[in-house]
Length: 68
Image (cartoon, rainbow, N blue to C red):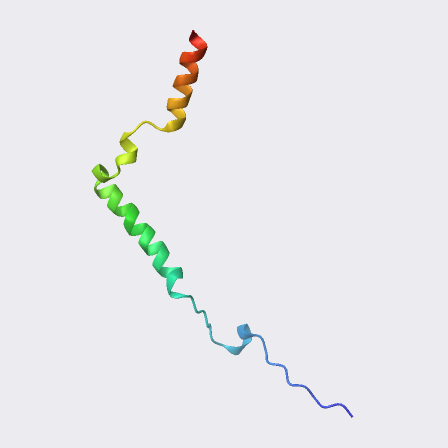
């Protein structure tokens, strides 16, 4: 004789939504947003934006070498 087994209904039919996020799942996007917002508000702090990118410097150097 087999015993009846009890199975729990899926969470979606039990009525409540139970979503739990770790603390960093909310903190990291907020931190990134604040950092980008501060860079937009004070672009003088973005020192790398004023410099010439390495790729364009390399391409200019190749152009100079091939022009000889």
